[in-house]
Length: 71
Ligand SMILES: [Zn+2]
Image 1 (cartoon, rainbow, N blue to C red):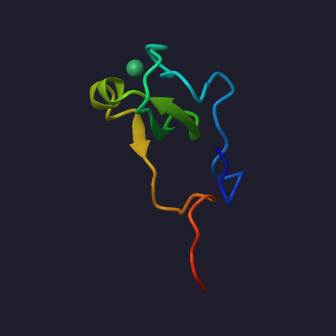
Image 2 (image 1 turned 180 degrees about the vertical axis):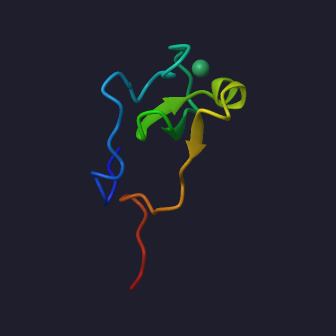
């Protein structure tokens, strides 16, 4: 996964794109969220996101690189 602004979207060093950052479950629908403590991006399953809403932020405000935007 790639973002236009790599510095603002740096992933946590312990994060894996194919499993939940907290419970390490392998599921298809992982959420990309920002860990408030480190301001790094991590992958969370919906269950962990709901259980840790005060520690993680949904951060979908910027377009992903795959998204084609007409200028
Ligand atoms: Zn989880």
